[in-house]
Length: 517
Ligand code: NAD
Image (cartoon, rainbow, N blue to C red; front, side):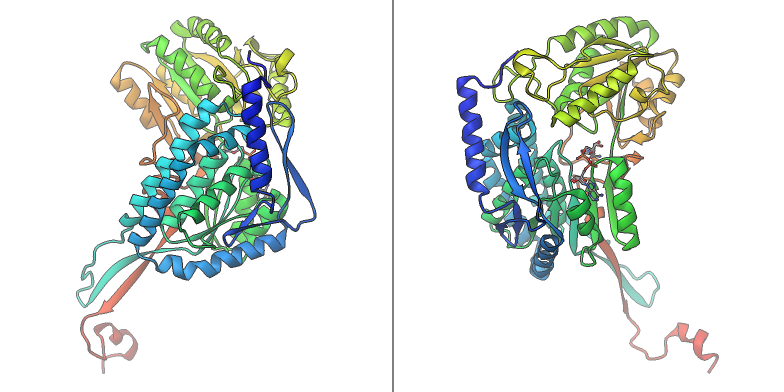
């Protein structure tokens, strides 16, 4: 275990904290290209979850701040949507290169506000964001309608693909930088302007991202950030009459509320919600690969990942060995200071989230077996929001620990007998975001990819994402896609344009109105 607070790490941590206080001294709202203070009359304190220490206190956004941000986005829309795809693409290329130059700054800030190990932010969150930015710089030049044609004989028709207007986006705390990027990039690449509300707990890297956009020459007002509570700033943003589209990533419960408000305003809606990903291991699978994949897939980002492996269904002949080996591998994962090089796993985002996860495991004890973990570590890590990697076996399929999203380092493992049962159990929750199937038999694996209802199904791996491919859920995990060219379907609207080719006053179809003159 690596104690938070060793000399070198304390130094990086306190330097990063001091930089935050200086950089965001003018406030945590980024509107029309500059930082301002929120006017809700309330404050929120960002806490380092690995120590419980205060990092930065900011004035949260109220309705007036949201109004100003929406007005800035509205004012920027004609210029930005009127820019050529090439001009938007150039700006996004410059943005990617600013991000690459400042990569270490982003990694440290994300680690500080989330408790993510530096190796995760340096190797996953930040490079993923830079790659996404570079992808959308290219994609900006590939917005296409359909080719023209004379479908009626007397007219030429074509389809224009147009931006929607001001997009209001709301993001969660688990990958603040990547979620800001997933929301902002396709929206602005397609010519929209945006107001993003990050989660209260993690406002910092979204602000830095917006500042970097300005540094890259993206005009003021194209990207705006309001930091405030969901109830106050979030609901006002979703319901704002000048916001044409809502794009929300977060829990299914809040997604329902957001959907109610957005539908009342007849707005375009994109919902990326919770998950409870199954991990199905057939009896011909490479057991070593499955065990490693399960531990990495369950513990990524301390399990606070909507696609994390949460329910392992293992065919009976492999079940006992899978449980033993998975527990042993989980026990080898090193919890510790996010800033220490030897740390594999950081804390949860907050003590509240840690207690929530612990309560799920404690309630499951009555009817299931906690094979390893199931407690917060003591000693040097006692002040942080840490929880040990936890494996739960022999739970009922209908139990809370199998059905509900926990969002922590907890994997539940259950046996199954035949392929039909494995696939049926995998589909037996309200969610449908991601899943994986483990088999060396191409026919079995292919059947699983067809029959498992999820927005993404991996075969013999679990977690990787790439900018070129879509991410998004089915069922209670929402609808719509982030990343890839498919995300342009969310952030653009199509328009049919029809030209008359006859140049006559009395068209053929006028007979239906004027009779047989
Ligand atoms: P959350 O739903 O509690 O909050 C998400 C965001 O919604 C925050 O910014 C919050 O301030 C805001 N919010 C809260 N109440 C609101 C309201 N009434 N109106 C408008 N906005 C409101 O989620 P969280 O705890 O921040 O994040 C974890 C959840 O996010 C998990 O369920 C996870 O699965 C989900 N998630 C999904 C994806 C995906 O791509 N599907 C990705 C990441 C996280």
